[in-house]
Structure formats: structure tokens, C-alpha cells
Length: 99
Image (tube, rainbow, N blue to C red):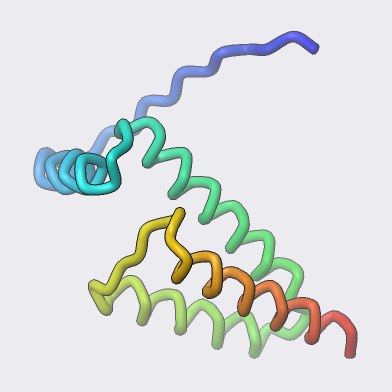
């Protein structure tokens, strides 16, 4: 399979760039690696939201995501806390789909 390299340019403010650089340093990764982690999470979350059939659940999940983002609390994507968090989300989706 051929591998293609794609360049993505995203303009952001200097302030946001500094925060992103700081977060990458704290996580011990490059800015590109951090972007891929965040983007992967976004894609997974978006897919999970789309899989929920009830618009009321979509609104509830969106509200929860926004509250989480505004809380300022964070966790690293390779931490046991993150693994447990994602496990609970997947279980909820599976339980919802099983009904």
C-alpha cells in the first residue's frame, strides 16, 4: 500500500500556539503527535455521537462535552485514568446499542 504524506496547516492565535506548545512539552511529545492524539479523540467522539440514535442523547452528550472542556480539568491520553474513562464511554455506547 502506498503511503501518502499530507500537510495540514491550521492558523491559530499566538496565545493558543503557546498553550499548545506548553501542553506538548508537558506530555513529552511533539506538537504534531499531540495534534494527532487530540484529532483522534475528536474523530472517535464524533463517531460515538453519530452512533447515538436519539437527538436528546446527542444534546445531552454535547452538553457534557462542553462542560468538560470548560472545567479546565485534563488527563493525558496515555494515562490509566484516560483508559478507564474511554472504557466507560464505550460500555455506555454498547449498552445503548444493545437496547
